[in-house]
Image (tube, rainbow, N blue to C red; front, top):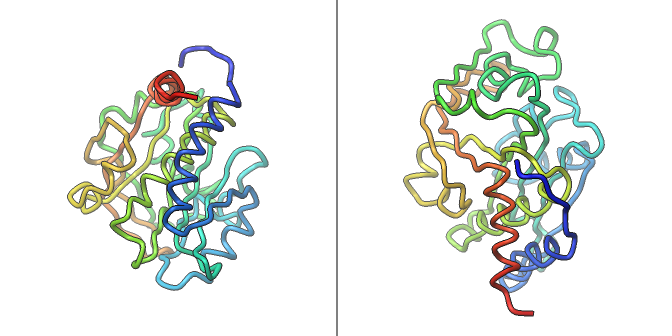
Length: 234
């Protein structure tokens, strides 16, 4: 991506927009870095699907500084929003290879993966996603807060935090077809979409997915943040 210096003030202004949107909806946003804590939250959140192994310390530990999570709670301090992000160092490979090797999900696939686990990536652009790659996943919104723009809020905060921490070369996610059809993905504001991002089978997780790849480049991410600060009046 374009070289530059992270401006903490610009990023804080960018994140503040989404934090204030959450406050207006009665949601308080927090950011954490200990994924053992995150899993303890997700496991006790009703209706939340089990978190995939790429965000679970027992299967894919995330080094300090290489990941963060977002939690939003309502006025009763009950969870209404969850999201997570981690950094993949793909300087010697690409996202397609990372998925198909199962290293995107398990630190050591030979130890943790089931013998029948598999992942096929057919999205052509996945082979071009290299370098510092921020992966977003595990988004969950409580039913009574759906349709209120919560994915947009989560994505905006994740964009700002990931840029501040890593200035990634790419930011990407894997999403189900229904999330595109229902307009959820449009809220993420990622301009690039391709089918066949991850045709996944994880036996122990009882997971069988056929997800799209969505992404934006590091330069596009920087432009979002810089564009806001150029147009905003302070």
